[in-house]
Length: 386
Image 1 (tube, rainbow, N blue to C red):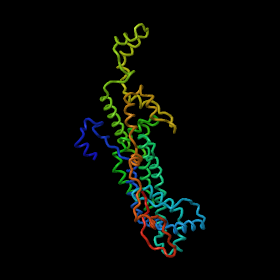
Image 2 (cartoon, rainbow, N blue to C red):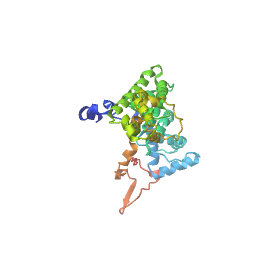
Image 3 (cartoon, rainbow, N blue to C red):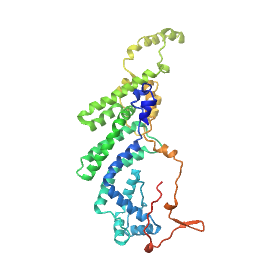
Image 4 (cartoon, helix red, strand yellow):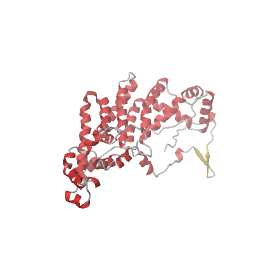
């Protein structure tokens, strides 16, 4: 759709940077695609664990039997078993995390429940444990990006660089499973990296605690001796964007408007410092050899405090950097994720079909189906996962 808009419907010369920064992808969707690619490596292990969870939450009698076994084994985990939605990797992570804590319970029940045929092998448990430990970073970043209080785009660059560095470390792992998973995830990651790192690098510059120093620091760790080219790319795009904004602004703001000497004299007639205003006006061209962006980048970094409000800082420094303030207003308004807004507009609600319901209708009253453990039938049951 974006390609169609840019190629057929919109005039690139009317867009900032000729449309190079027109499309910003949802960070959470990208993370989902990357992790799903990695999970394919242990698809068989996840499938076995998923079948095990499904078996023990499928009937009320089985749930009670599982809870009783957990009590007898004095399992410290108090969470309920979670069945995942395969298209949402974070739910798969939560399922693995909870299931691993009940590993001994599953093992004991596999020895006593004759109908339980989906118990994972020790190798499959090991694979799930290795991968679950690695996915913890992705899970926490996804949590941050998909909240209802959106993080500003300046925070995205740090996280996406952190992910890239982690994946490259995993690819060097001596564990063949982890290195294989990381290689698959890196291939998917690189597909989106070039589209996001420039724009989000520019947004990171508009945090006065970091500016270009953060870009230089992170890209140096990622690219090593080749980092200078990538750093210059982000710097050049930032200056191009600044000049684009500068050329589109019809006139400078408020106190930055330059009045002629006669206008100054008329406005403040009788003021002994009127000659000072004329002096400032005449020397203005000399004072403005450096652009706003140059002056901003040359200023010292602010202390890196967690309570710092980036948006408020730009609001109060708008008179000092009027063009940069407009850029910050637009750049920092870019949502990192559209997950919360998608949830807001999802009004269909949850539907349970007759085939998904574990109820039977007696005299038009829906009541739970009670099945004795010894006589329970083998059924195919898919719980409602929204």
